[in-house]
Length: 614
Image 1 (tube, rainbow, N blue to C red):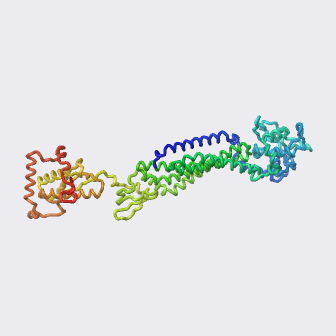
Image 2: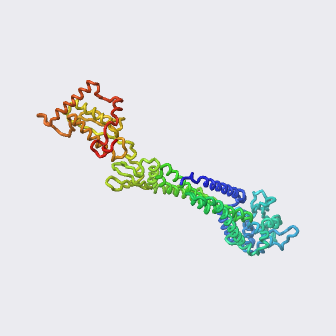
Image 3: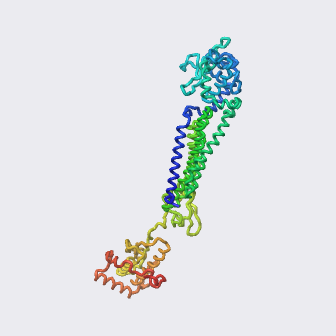
């Protein structure tokens, strides 16, 4: 079925595809969390977790082992450096030891309503705020007891990170404060502690925190709170149902009229389009819930969208292949469709590789080295697969330039046969011996290919050898009569059709015939050539001559006498032609050629075909 037969349905479907795609893109770019661009990659977060664990679990160094510019003070909570203090706070909160975590907060000079007794609560709320808003890079924190001296802050303060709030950014600060014994250690500054309630009100659990037990909120599974796993499950079910309803609605026109594209289009809607719509709805909904840095890092990998886009591209390649195959068949190039499956598979592999590289880049892997490695590996594979690639390129060349096609009768090299199959590796030809010869495409395409099936006519060019006893007038007679016969024969193209006295051979005088038989089938050509040969033999006999055979003759007397009577008749004809200016040598006038055209009977009198000739 052609595309014009269902053009209106396709237009409706494609229009809906465009609208759906535009909506998906708008939703992806407008509703996606803008903070994702500022988030660390998943690779950095995984590496950071390992580094954090290493920092918090390393054994306490002895004073003589410390090589920092200043001696790190001994502290049971490891608060001698900014990095140690933050790592200790995070470790304590992960263990739900908020009493210990409160030791990392500067609870002096708190505003009214806050006191030291609320230290554990403030530690828990700060942990929740950090989990939902900020990923802390421990490597960026100082290991010097004096902290960073070039960060633009007072020497007694260090920056942990910045949280974007609805009003203005809030910087999480550490401050170097004196311990009870006067030793200076690092704690979360009083300014930051005073802002914890306001930050928790904006970034805390809200109604969820009031409804769910604290243990359920604090419990972490694979880096995410348990309630987040429940939320992901519920959001996933909602997004799936919404995507299912939308894609089925878009697919309704496809069921009204079944075409060749119905199945692949439905496959796209039921597969990649539904998956992409599902993840966009899920991302938008999760963004409304305020995803944690870990969630945002996971979302920034775009794993499912990458799979959906790569999957959709592969399905579009199939649709494109169907359309291209249909177009090739309409143009009479259906044999080229054999190239479409391998090309489509190669394109799908390339799409999968590109999707994998994009995903690795989103995760945080340096793909430059990977791409360089793939280039070197691809070069090695290409060198190893040189012959198969050459054969594939040869197949593409044979199908595109088409020096021969399946079913053509041709000469290749020193063999003749009919092409039976042009595969991706080799071309199969059935020879005149009825054997099958397989030639690698890379070799076959470089051979001299003589395609007999593409002839519009067949060349007829015998050489007529006459004995030296033939007189000049007999030769003139033969030249004129054979040329008349060629002009008069209905199967011989008169332009050009000629016979010339070519020269003197070792044992004969040679006449060369040059003409084209106006047929393409070789069997028909043999029939016509047979008729022309017999007529030439008749003309030679009528001239009183004969065809010469290779021989050596000692002339003691005229051993093999020619027919004197016929020779005399030929002489008479030539004499009359001369007298009437009708000796058409070296060429016939055009009006005589027109007069002779098609005047011979073919098939000749006496053959079965002659009885039905009109």
